[in-house]
Image 1: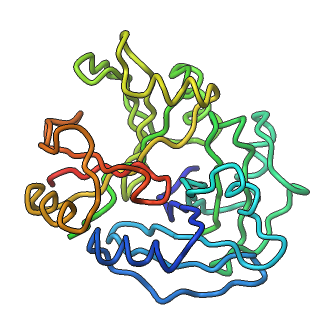
Image 2 (image 1 turned 90 degrees about the vertical axis):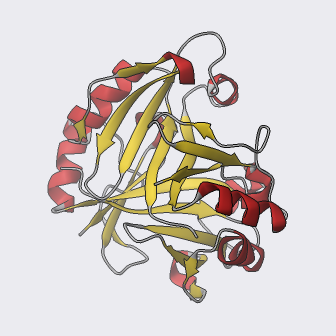
Length: 134
Length: 134
């Protein structure tokens, strides 16, 4: 079921400063920042060849990463996203296995325009897991 | 400088339980557990095709992930590891850019038998970054 790693998301309090650190200090290739108001974040993609790192800064009053940054003011590793072929089949298998799907259990359209689900970090040893239909 | 994502390391308090969750619940392909006493961890590799997820459980009295699991008893995302072509050149560039290399600043032989360095999470917005010479 679990496919390739689509991305690792890192929450940062200051996207401009993080851009400098990743571009100049680490020498990575970065996208331009992209505001995604419907997802409550501004994102910069770091292209590492085999997958993506997403640097996320809160956008607006109800950002899904605001609470995380309150607990971790310097930022930190927020979630990992894996691809699946069939998100409804994945969801049904996960629920039958006792894993908790966040929200109402139905896929939403994620930041890449594809259906996504988030799984409860308590069921995966403190790691927030996103699944995206490839 | 920054090459591909070699792995994402997730610290877990109970590798046997994590194996069940990743293999049976998430349907991932896993390696057998491998004890690395010289690195203070037992590791299971999750093969996601384009990169690896490493599930780490503390091993021995001086595990480098023990303090993390004291702070995060359920486990959590521990570090990301990127490949570089030349770790000494990378180290020199990082130090010249003001980034702090952990330990004495010299590469050590990591869990994959290759030279590695760890960078201070405060310089990368709360994310512990490992560099491995590819």
